[in-house]
Length: 236
Image 1 (cartoon, rainbow, N blue to C red):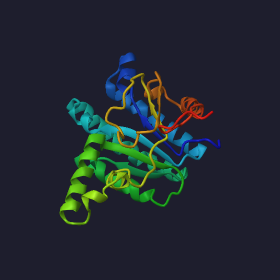
Image 2 (image 1 turned 135 degrees about the vertical axis):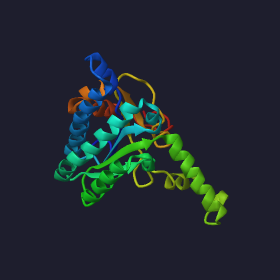
Image 3 (image 1 turned 45 degrees about the vertical axis):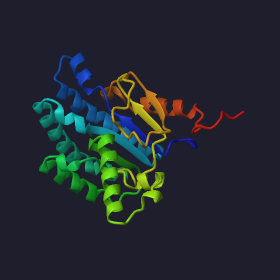
Image 4 (image 1 turned 90 degrees about the vertical axis):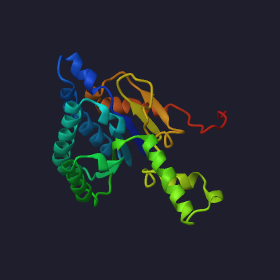
């Protein structure tokens, strides 16, 4: 318990495959994936973790079939509405990163209410990546840096890694120490490309709707068995 990561990021993958294996529509998998979100979020809060980032919806997901996108947005609205009492009960504060301007008005309204209603909580910070992609985030950061240089607020020669970080959507959060991806895929899919530079990566064949606290604990124990060197030599 003394060697827990401060921040875990998760790519929640496998909802559609899980549903297909059961002969159901993909949306059936997304609905059941919400159970895993609740279980893992509660588990992280119980462990005393400080930050959990969940990759819920990427900018590329807008290109999915219209019925699936519509269903995902309806699921998002209903889930936010239902889960706020649970977040408050567990002292969890909700945050969002991503291009939320692309969300339907109903989703934005529910999201803003949830952000306000959980803003007083001091436990786990739950960061939902919605309509997010790392290339979008980095492009936006470069645009804002360029604008401030043009206005004379920033000198090009003074731009460093800290400057870049302060223009990212995650500027208020530490980088994840551990990134988990479910469903057996071995890629990070445009997720936190800048922030994952020195994160430990953990891949599991478990599909997201089947991922529970026990799977989370296994990932953390695996992380604790690794030596984090940050490019330095192995210690003797």
